[in-house]
Each structure stands twice: as C-alpha cells, then as structure tokens.
Amino acid sequence: MFDSVPPAPPDAILGLNESFQRDDRPGKVNLTVGVYKDESGVTPILDAVKQAERLLVDRETTKSYLSMGGDPEFNRQVRALLLGEQNPAIAEGRAVTIQTPGGTAGLRVAADFLVRNQLSSRIWCSNPTWANHHNVFRSAGLETDGYEYLDESGTRLDAAAMLESLQSIPAGDVVCLHGCCHNPTGVDPSLDDWKRVIEIAQKRRWLPLIDLAYQGFGDGLESDAQVVRRFVESGLELIVVHSYSKNFGLYAERTGAVTLVAESNTAATTAESQLKSAVRANYSNPPKHGAAIVATILSDDVLRRQWLGELATMRERIRKLRSELVAGLAARIADRDFSFIESQRGMFSFSGLTPLQVDQLKSEHAVYIVRSGRINIAGLNASNLDRVCDAIAAVV
Image (cartoon, rainbow, N blue to C red):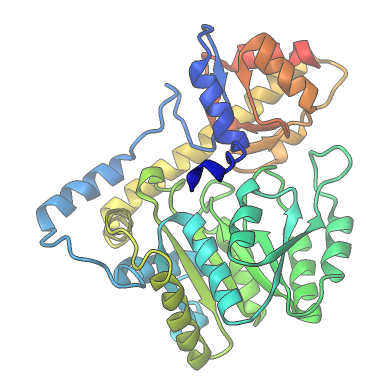
C-alpha cells in the first residue's frame, strides 16, 4: 500500500538547516531557522524559566491530563498579558482563551473552528507571509489568498497598496494579520496604518485573525500588544493566536494560546466550547509543562521582573545587531543603502538580496539564509558579523 506514496516536498527552511549541518566548511554561518541565539550562538534557557522549573518540581503533585482548554491559570495570565489586566472585554467575559501546543497548533485550531462552524471558507494572508500559514490553513479546509504588503524593493511596506487590497476583501472572509515583528520581513505597519486597517475591517466586515508570535521582541511587551488592543477597543470581534516560544525561549515546550473576543459573553462562551471541540478532534488536550512555566513566572512578582529583564536583553541585543549589520554593510558597499534593516522589527529582516545572491552566499561563502532573502538577525554575533558583511558585499 505505501509503495504508491510519493515523497513530500522538502521544507525550504528546515531543508536548508539540514544542508548546513552537512556542510563541513569552517566558519559556516546559519541565519535560517527562526530561533533566538545569544552571543555564543546558543538558544539559551532563560534564568527565570530555570527557577520556575525548580519550583514546579517541588510543587507538582500529578501528571494527569489537562482539560481540552488547557491550564486555566496560564489562560488567565496570557490573556491579561495580551489585552491588559483591566481590559473591559475581560471584565465583561467577552474574551476567552484556550491553551494550544504552540502558535502553529493555535492557528490550526482557529482554522478548524472557522471551517467546522461555517463561519468562513477563505483567509487572506500578507504577500509574503510565514511560509507555513498557507499549509496550516489549507489543511483545515480554508482557501487561501493574498493581499499586497511590500513595495518594489521588497524591504519596506507599501501601505497604500496594502490598504487598497484590504478594501477589496469581501465581508465574511478572514484576514490574517501579523500583530508585530512581521515574519518573514520584519516590516510592520505604523500605528496610523493600523488605524486605517481597523477602519477598513469595520467597514468591510471581514474577521481579523491576528498572529502574535513575537510580543516583546519589537518595541516592548506593552507596545507590541497595542495593535491587538486597538482592534478590541474598536468593537471588532477577532481571533488572536499567540506564541510563547520566543519571548520565554520555550521553543521545545510548544506553548501557545488562542484568544477569541466576541461581541457578547454568550457568544464568547459558545465559541469557547467550539474551540475546545476542535481541540478534542485534533490532539485532545495540550501539554502541561510549558504552560505551567509561563503561569508560574507571570504570577510571581520576582520571577516576572526577572523575565522582563531577560526579554529586554534579547530585544536590545537584536536591535544592536541590526545597527552593527547596517554599519558593516555601509562600510563595504558605498552605493547601496541598507538602513531599512534598522527600521524593521523582531528577529527577521528581508535583506533585498536576490535568490541568485542567496545561492552564492551558500555555495561560495558558507553563509546560509532563506532564498527569499530573509535573515535571522538573532543568528549574528561578534564572531560572524564581519564574515557575513564580507560575504554580502562580495555577492552584491
């Protein structure tokens, strides 16, 4: 029976990572996979996370299943982190949260919820968007389409084109928006642009689905939540998928959530039951450990302050690396402006490099980036920055 199964196409990013592992050239540089790395090139476990785990070892009394909706304390804490503790949507019971195995599972649960309840059959993603968005949404039965995002340079937002595209999306469709630190480009709309997006959503009556995977990696924890909060303040119903892989460094623990904000308490409660039904049909209930870590940190004043400090350190390190990369390229390539890299946010940058130039970086210089030109800024450090700048200068 299985002889007829064709091989699946390789994942572009994970396939590059495998090629990097096989490369035996000294000084090779991997700027592909989207994980944070420190100055030594390691994805660290945060000290606040280590301390929370020690507490959990002492306190934990069971390994029994969580409910379909996950850890209630985790859900309460991350909903407040997302919307603000005093948000009226929380007080009125119009905002409900369920825990999911990472943001990816959150996207799938949200998509299953939309399809199973015949709320929509099509979702629109920015062009470009995270490569796996289309896979996840289509697997759930949603048709996917795209709206304009970048200008001709591929490094800056074309706000006019984006807004024009959003105005043409039919009522009842779903629009996937990146709450901050757009993946893969690092290019975010301004607050004025977001104001227009909200106005269009109100007028056109499409449903926002906001993917927020990098809260705290852009301009700060509160600043990065402002887009979501403005949508809620506008009175729009929406779905937010949030991840805690990056800001807590919990990549391997698969810790995420879905928050749905409805017009009424009754609608929110009913929607929550359907989200849980989608969970039951998928993975039954989420894993415990990552959510317990997050809930422990957020509910402990000392650990929370420690985590906020570590998050700020990661954010500022990425910002510093952006400046150093721009300076290094400016010193080597006088006739090309790379200053846009400093205005981008989060771990990623669309560099403006062509697929041919990316291939040259890999084959001639052992520098690995995605063929779209996306660079993981967090993969840079003092030992490889000059090498990367030299390589880019050579291919440009």
